[in-house]
Structure formats: structure tokens, C-alpha cells
Length: 336
Image (cartoon, rainbow, N blue to C red; front, top):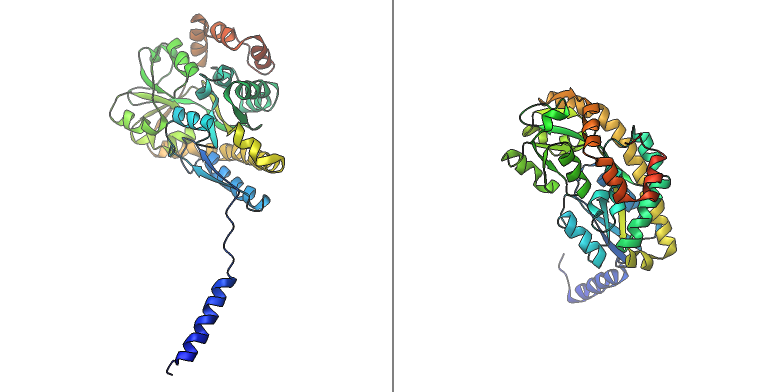
């Protein structure tokens, strides 16, 4: 059927009328970036992304947060600098990486301080966590949300030999994540620690810049370290977590209603991720064994004795001060 000029004008007008009726999607009032160094499939990232969807819905689209995993926004020091300047609005960051700003933040990494993960969370959700958060907020210009994410107890992997006693660490070239307490822990144990960002670790192991590293089992699997490491020594020497941080000026601009929603949803996400870790860790050891890794137990008492002999605990007690140490001792193992 031929289209007349009149028909074209009518249909065109109808089309433009339809276009005029389309309401464009309203942009979020707050568009925030959330950076960290973990893989996208890690429970911390997975549960964060779920929380961001709930936050967007609960704020009627006012707050939109986008995750940038795997150090997409830069190294950990760079992300911390960006957070403090406001270039990045939010981070998930280990306490030990905040040591230069707020030294108390690294107390979570004190070697063999916590007998179990249940004790860790009683401490971090209790008095010790409050002392840490207050120190970060007072010194860093950052807001810290209440619930800490779990990364987990860290174990040693090597390419050359299993670590059975502390004597096996003597001179070992081992990667540690940046942070004063982690370097000092392995120096005190007699190893030769080298700080390397997580994003560069696989290559460093592959090229034998270092022969060993230490991480929770879940990250050992997710980062495919089984391709470049042979032995897993179950040292469980340090527990590590990630705090959720916001730039303080950005946090103030959000307003109390949005702040309460974010705090609620991120707290629920952190608890869900802790539960994920329990379930995932039940299977990850078997998975790594099937991939060819060899597991062995560690004489932890030899590690602890070496730390005591190196005056490790006295040194860090002086570093953290009496208030933080008293809060730690409410929950911790007996420390020399």
C-alpha cells in the first residue's frame, strides 16, 4: 500500500509524540566507586555487589555504587590516597594496609593472637573493633563501617619444600602483602619477606622472584597459585579482614537516611560473606589437593616460640599502646 504524504506526516507526528512520552531514566544523585584488590568471584566482592543493588533500590535510585575489583583503580596505597582525596569514594581495605595512617588498624594481623574465627569476630564486632575504627576515623579522614569482612586465616605455600617447623622458614624468600606488621612477623620468624601487591604475585611466583607466599586457602585457589606452587603448610599464622571505608566528606553528603541504609546493607553483606567463607573452605582444600597441591601440618609452637624469642609481642604491645592492647587481651590467646 503506497504511503501518502499526509499519511507520512500523521505517522511521523505520532512517532514523535511517542518519543516525547518516554521519560528518561533519572541519574543517581550519588554515583560512587568502590575499589579493592580481590578477585571478582571472592565473597567480599560478590556480597558487596548484591548489597549495592539493595542500596540502590532502598534509596529509590539515589545511591548507585559500582565495584572495581582486582586493583582496577590502582595499587592499595594509590587507592587509599584516592579515597582520602575524594577521587574514590569507597574501598574495602585490610587494616594492615592502613598502618602508615592509623597504626592500630594492623592489630588484627598480630600473629597467633586469635584461637579461632569465632574469637576474631567477638573481638572485631566488640571492643577491639571499636578501638580500631575510632583510630582510623580520627587519623585518616575516613568513615569505617561496623562489620569487618573476612579474608581468613593465612597459610604458607611454597614451590621448593614444605614448611613443617619454623626452622624451614630460615632465609625463605616469601611474599607478604604490604604492611609493616606482616613484614615484621616473617622477619621475626627468620624468613626473607618481600612486600608485593596481590595483582603482581602470580608473576612473581612464576618467575621465581620469590619462592613462597601466604594467603587464605580461598585466595590460593582463586588466584590459581596451584599452578606455580606445590606445598600448602597449614600455619594459620595471621587472620586478615577488610574494612569498608568511605571518604568522610562523601559520607556526610549522603545524609543520615542513606548512611543508615548503606550501613545496614553492607553489614548484612559482611555477615553473609563470613558464612560463605565457612562453606567454601569446607571444599577448597579438597579442590586444591585434586589440583596437585600437597598439604602438611605445621608445628605452630615452634613459630610462637620464635616470635617470643624475637621480642615480637613486646615490640607490638609498645607500638599499639595500652588501650588497644587491653582490648585485644579481652579476646586473645595469652601473649608473652
